[in-house]
Figure (tube, rainbow, N blue to C red):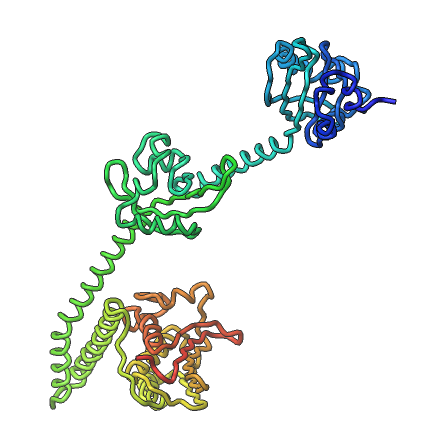
Length: 491
């Protein structure tokens, strides 16, 4: 029966040198799980191996005794040989990495090996060998590096640049962000604090983001190497880098977008100013034309061709007046942030009655139906709601077929009143619904009444009252515009 190591060692003087009470602990240490231990003689043959090393080898402990290492572990013996030679020369070898196969069934392992010479009376008695299996740790590090590489590849294609930092100190940066800041190599950024690159007025904001660990995108202005300012968007996330938690920051260059927004803003401002000037300058001449045509229409002695001509001029003047009103409303909505309302108590069907009659006179061949239901009282700007209804009726009457009836329905509910204009013959594709309310939209199917601002202004009026205006295609055919208006307009 094989003797235990403590029993075998107790036969020699070195074991006798250890106090009796320590010997159980030495035995427990040698048998500790997780660390393989072997005691080798001067010919480097195992005298004893613990259970952990036997498990790594795939052999019973007694199967190791007295056998050469080249026979026990043929695939690591060559790599282990120089380390053993150093131990035989009296050197302690600590934590040397070794890669190979101890047990064929277990495959290649990543090992950490330590060797110490065992001396007895000043002479070499053998070598103590320690082996730790680090395969799982090494593989996990490889997986982390692979994920890090994959993450960097994704960041390279998903943003204009990225960098890693720890509490604001740059740890690493890709070449794209380096060039974005006007530097030549990433090493010029590494080790410096982010505050060195951020414009002074944005440093407190960046400090707040760092202190709170926020993971939401934010805009900031940075200073390039030549001192020029560059607007960027930054999004940070916590990632694992070299075994610790750091921040990965993705960067997007906003200079192109900001320049486009500025050009658009200048263009919009110029257009609004131009519309305001046109509206102001044309109003005077138009009023003169209208006064002149009214005077001519009241003169006696005009022949029928002359009266027809004067009527046509008067009609054209009214159309021009309508366009100017639309331009003025459009300019007010854009420059003042919305239309100004003057709400007063009103009943909606009474407000819209004259609008319906006017449209019937203009389109005597069309069928125009009106339905009312419920309480139609509220506080509204009556002239604006008349304008809203007129724009909706004008749109469906001009764009729909002549033989298709048009229905205007008013329905009072608890919270407000719904105004619905339904054209049974008008058809609009669902993907075009949103664009119907864009300004200056002119249809090709029929000559427009104005400048293409009718539906845009109608929605602005509904919004100004705290309501909303939408369009939908009906399953039974046709299109309907639905305006919902609260009874009390927010002032």
